[in-house]
Structures are given as structure tokens and as C-alpha cells.
Length: 564
Image (cartoon, rainbow, N blue to C red; front, side, top):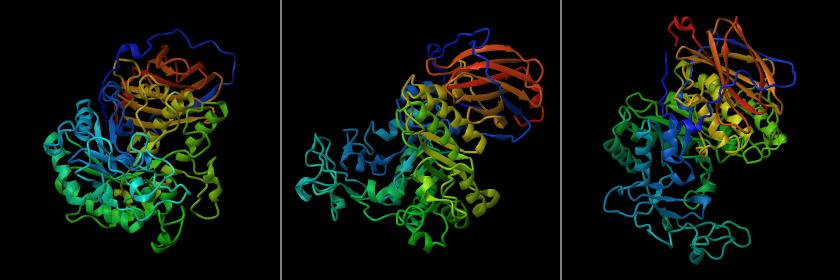
């Protein structure tokens, strides 16, 4: 079936429409073969993989991002009634106000309503975080400095660091490097139970419509709950356990779905690799909490609870298994684009799908001595296997709602981002959000443009993922898609030299082709065009470190079986 993405064309100035009669001349190199079969491994991919978190709303609308996430540490404690959030350990545990007019509940112009309204007006769906930590900023939080802070210097003594603007707000660490304990959560926060958050869902539905209409369709159960004892230790000093995570999921998901039955819920919202296997009470991989739960990895155990313990009425508490994942190799999550880091960054993509790949990071030190294969992340197949084992064919969907593979203006980060879309589509990720939206006209933004608006006129990659096999995945990534009477082939040149690709098709792909792409010095542009002769398209001179999209049109017959 066809999956139509929202179209919000960029201004034509954002796309270089400079056709060339042929690819750039290059020295002779051995061609890398790519085999595409539009009848193999066919499955519709979700348009929700083209998501971001936050960003400039005007630019988000221009880009046509399909999903916008309201999330992160600061929204774990967001008080929707007074429009105040707590910065947590990111910035001195302070309550920061938004809108100043508190004569309305919530205040007019509050941040959450503004975010949802702008995203929905732009045609983006919304993933909104519902706090489950049980605390929210106090309703009497000041509107100006000094703000309420979790670790007041006046109350708890001198600290290593304080806010330049609010010297009474400390970082919670004494000058002798010991953490302050026993502080009072009421310094900044007040209790907030599921009813408090249910009322927020009701407000959102009354303002924008319900999930079945134009309202918020997706709700996340908080953010990185297994880090609360560090990020939000001023109100949650104890480590989150298996049982606490599930108890909160049931209580808050039930409140959401009672208020808006059409809403979809994501959880548990992990922070990374360790909490795939254990809780915050464990030692990364294992410990007493995991042992007490049959030795089952946390995420697998969570899937078991979701699928074996439905809410009253039969609905599942959680619809999407929600993970966060960042590559851990040195320099990858940074602005470093040196050849060594670029190579490490692009190779680390294998952590998402390759069962034999050993992580080039501290994860490799975890070893491979048993069936857990800790040193080999294999993230997406691993988690999909857990879901299949615990839920069968009616399993949960999979979301990776926070990730980042490099700075906005790293060329290798842009190539990695393009390949991430190919991986998400091929491996069956149902929802994904980059942290955060890339800066306007940045290199990473070009990777989004390649999929969402490759010709500057709103044309996008859509439909189904199909088989594409590169003879050398370390040099040239290959991913293929069919939709809208077109065949698309993503080719990512991961090397520091131009490459030649010979793309062979199992069946006739169409009559005409155009190649679009970006590289270190060019935004997305039309590189070359030609006629298809036979079953092969040869592309010489794919630029070094580049993302390229081959678009083949003119063959409606391949959609006659109705899958498109």
C-alpha cells in the first residue's frame, strides 16, 4: 500500500537544481556491485522514522519532519498547569518559568501548547512526554530570579559549582566532591499523580482534538527513567527498579488511555545500552534486581509484562517499545570529522543490525561469554527478538526516539544520518527521532532533505523497503525502496575517494533515472540523469563521503501486484 508523507517543500534556493550530463570525472576505480530486487524483503516502512526533537518550528515546517518529539530531561518535571519545567542535573536543578500570565490553566502561550500547535499546523505528528516520576515543579514557582533550586547553597552549604545568575543554586556536590543527600524535594517540587497528568491529556484533547483527530497521537512514558537517580536525584535519589518502571507504566498509561482511548503510548524510554539488560539498581548488565526477575533482560521483561498483563478492557499499556541509543565510540557523538572518527562513526552503524559486529567502544569490554553477546549490540534484531519471544505475532512496535550520530556539520555525520534512514526502513523501526532537529542548512539536514524533498518540489522517498545488497558495505551502503511508481536506491559513499557503483536490478526498474545527492561541499542537488538500458545503471564518480539517491521512474508495471 502507498504511504503518503506530508509535503512541505523547501524554498527552491535550498536545493541546487544543477543537472549535469554525466557524473564528475574520476580516476578509474573498481566498481562496487549493488543488487536490487524489488520483489524481495518487501515491507512497508513507517514515515514516522523521519522525526526530530524540538528545533525551530518555522524550519521544521519547511522541512516536513513527520514526527516532532517533546522530550528530554527537562520535561520529566514539566508542570503543564503553570508552564514551569525543572532543568535537573543539566543546569542546577532549577525551576524555569515559561509564560508569565497565570490567570489561565495552563497559561496562555505555554510552551507545550505552542509546540503541539505548531507541529500539527505543519502536518507533523507529535510524540509528547508524560511525566511519571511523581513530582512536578511547584505551582508557586517564581517567574523571575532567584528561581527555586534543588540544592540551595543557603540550605545545604557551599558547592562545587553554582549558577552565575542565581548563586544560591548549586550543582548538588559539596566542595569536597561528595554528593549532597537528604535534601527536601519540596524545595522545588510537589507531588503529581496519574490524575494530574490525565487532566493534561484532557486539556490537550479539548484544545487540539483527540488522538483520533488532529490532536496528539503519541505519548511517551517519561524520559530515561533508569537515570533518574542521577539526572533527577533531588527528587528521586534511589535507583529505578523493574517493578517501579512497570507500576508507573500501568498507572500512567491507563490514565492516558482512559482519557483518550485512541492514543498510542511508548515506553519504557531507555537511556542506552545498560538498561536494555538491567535496571538502575543493577550494575549495568546484571545484579540483584535482574536476578529477582528471573535473570531476564529488563527490556525483554518489560515486553513480557506489556503483552501478558493488559489494562482493564483489554488494551495494552504500551504500544511502542521506546529506546534511546547513542554510539559509544570515541568522538562519534561530537563535531569531530577527522578521517579516523568518520570511519569509526560510519562503522558503528553496524551496532544497529549486524549480529557479528563487536562495538568499537567500552561495550566490547563487556565480553561475549554467553548467549547475551554483550559486546555485540545488534540492537534492532535483538530487541525485535525479545518482543517476538514475549508477544508473538501481535508484538509491540519499535521506536528509537532519541539518537545522534554526529554533529550537525560533520559530513560523515550526514552520511551516517542518511544511512540510518535506510537501516530504520529495512530493519522495521516504526518511529524514530533525532536529538535534536539539525540546524538549518547544516550537512545533517541535507540527509533529511534527501528523503523528504530530494528535488525541491516536495518529492519524497515513500512506500516499501526492498532488497538491496552492496558487495562492499564498508565502502558503499545500499538500501532500496519502491513507492509512487518509482524505485529509489540510496547509495552512501563512506570512503575518502570517489566510487563507482554498478546497480543491477532483478526486474526492469523503469525507463529513466535521476541521481540526487549531497557531499562535503554541496547541498542536495540533481547530479545526473539518463535513460535506463537493460537491467543495470552504472554510476561513476560518486563523490567521496556522500549520500546519493538514485530515482528510477517510468515503470508502473512493478506495482500491478498491489503492494505499493
